[in-house]
Length: 156
Image (cartoon, rainbow, N blue to C red; front, side, top):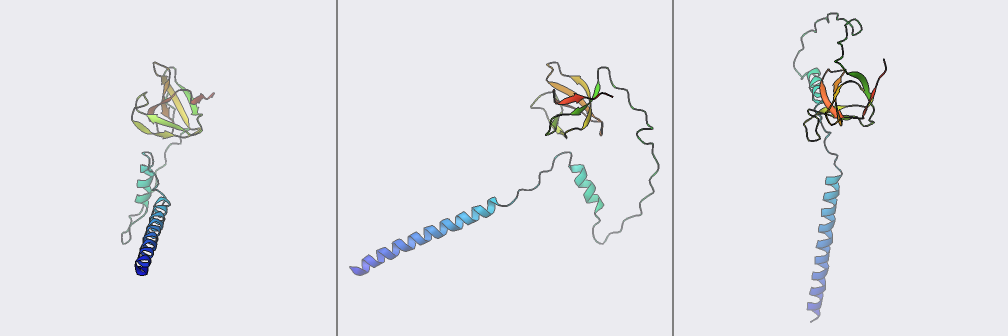
């Protein structure tokens, strides 16, 4: 009778030890999985920089051809600026987080990238409902739509 009681107590203690040990192992596993930093996001406008950096780093065992000398080009001040379309005006981005560029004046439209705070743009037109602005980015010359009210006209 005493041996049956000891067996029962030992069985309960072993079961509790297995449950506690398994729970601790599971907790450690999930804590380690959640502490791993996710991969850095790559945005559509970052791909060119990544490709350019990959092109700059030579692979071991290869030789690079000598770089040709750059030919002088006209500086931006020497080139004549394109005249703005009627009603267009230069502006800067005033939204602190920057703006999302879209292909069409809709929230569900394809995202073309983004533009940062204080970037120079040219506002080309307003949408019919006056909630979107079509802009041209001065640095790249790309046209896109952004939410209206997030740019400020620049006086020249």
